[in-house]
Amino acid sequence: MSITPLAAVPSARRPAPLFRGRIGRDARSGHYAVPHRYRLHLSTASPDGLRLAVGHSLLGLGGSCPVTLLPPVPDRPGGGHSALRPLYEASAHHYTGPALAPVLGDDWSGRIVSTHTPGILRDLDRLRHDGRARLYPAGLESVIEAVERMCAEGIEEAAQRAGRAGADPDERAGALDVLLDTLGRLERRLSEEEYLADGRLTAADIELWVSLVQLDTVHRCHLDASAVHRIAGHRALWAYARRLAAHPAFGRHLDLDGIARRHHGRCQGLEAAGAAVQILDWASHAAGSPDTSRR
Image 1: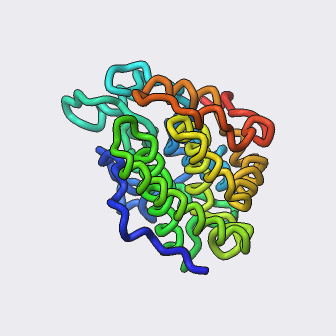
Image 2 (image 1 turned 60 degrees about the vertical axis):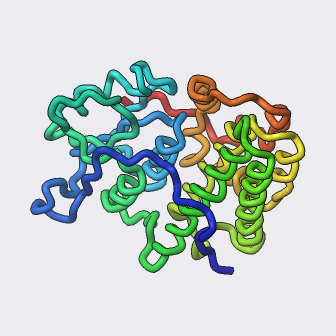
């Protein structure tokens, strides 16, 4: 079974990143791949931060690209972090906007390389040095991009629209249909395969796993109980999520309390009956606990 993007769903509404620098292959690029130069600043309570933390662990970059963990709830107006303010001000003249995470910073210059999560994850893949499997193997880029689009549009956006208070009932029903169709397509794939691409862990699995975490810990709180039961009926999909949660590179970054605090701090929607229908007991399945020792 091939994985294709959803053509009928509008593009993902993620905010445009302010910085989109890339790590090149040699010194001519300005930012080139060298150990101990770059640092990640992230909160694992946010989906993008969790994606990067999992990828960082899978690539074994703890010794060459340190991580600074940020609190789940930003401490500045507009969702910014005080700790990131110096990086933003050094990187953009007279910058007055919010200092948002995640950030890939250059410790040599004290400036930001990128705030674009997909680009950062691809560059982390370039930084590895010990022969570990790639997150973006040659020949699988189109599959991974299709999964990224399915997760952004068919899971996260569709779940938000399905749970939006005050939305037209037909709009909510249509969004739920898109969500269930996407989950069904992934269910069929995972009923046949252990992972999404070529039988091995890739960035596609990071993307889907984080989307499933968000679906169960955040989005279901605004869905009715019937919808949540239909979502939970995709047994292969949730078995896959449970199996990855037990993997140390995934589960130890799962900050359930932080996700809840971030959600309650940002959400303005109404809680629905689905909030009482937990799909997975993430705490019991997760391997270890969030690593708060890396600074």
